[in-house]
Image (cartoon, rainbow, N blue to C red; front, side):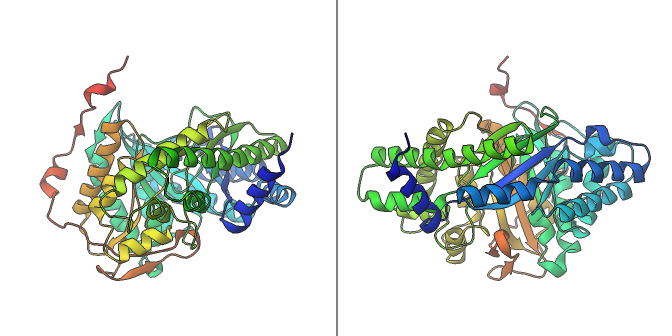
Length: 452
């Protein structure tokens, strides 16, 4: 039986509290596109993507109108390109990126992810070529997103890959310096990467996935913040229960949209990602949730504890609301994409060290953080190594999306526009880790990885 109060509550969430579906992402396998001829390879990729996703944007629009639920992004993820490019040279990988970009623009989607490589235990020749092509690929495309998985709890940390990604991020920043080094906003370095993630820049279609799948990412920081505000001065147990109930309602909306999209596109339903994904809009901030819980400002002592509780309650409430939960599922803390995080960082309350501590208890990691453009590659690699080690040691996904903004220094800001927002350039510890990073090799997997 339909409960009128529930219907009205959902309408209010949409109208007043920024509830939306952050993305419908169609995953597409490209494994059957492989060819020794570069042109045929690119043609195969373009034809398959444009055929499979031909109705994705249209269908998303239909569901928006029919149910009155905003769907902010329609996206595509593909098989990690390093598995498709094979023995082709670096130039062909750049052409593949341009092909992905052309297909995405033709279809009208917001982003396409999967210019990716999995190198947690070592490099293949194809993965080396893809990583070498990343700076050119991201500078010569607009909608392509790239990711590299450099570590896992089972394999340990590939420090050669960490060092290489420090250099790659620097080169990407330089190649897109005329646009605020925006290429780095489309490049993420992972540990324990999920293969069904609908969120960019880390989305790709994993090798264990079906031919095609629909994955949906929900949102709703504003809904949670409003619920906490209405609750008043209750204790933390009651607050956790309230967040669980709110997350359940948000996720049910995601489950509805995911099921409808999969049915109308005749594609298997993959997962709902429970993540609270913020935006630069006022009223749509994870930082403001933490402040509503009782912190004077995000970054104050107590922030990590509040975030841990929020993340746990969101998962407990959301997992009951969907038949298949996956992706990242938790609370995102991207600095440039969260109005409250931007304010806290600009005020000096939120440092890179505090953000790193917070990533131990939430989804993703050091995300969308602008740092001085003259930051050495080895320092960037050191930041990656620290963050990735948190994921490996805690058997969780962590990631780094740093933007060394070309020509910018601490205290400046850089703007990316749209959902990518803008960010104050924050201070890094520039004491050199170069000798440690240069040792290379692999940091062995932790003992608790031996679970067989």
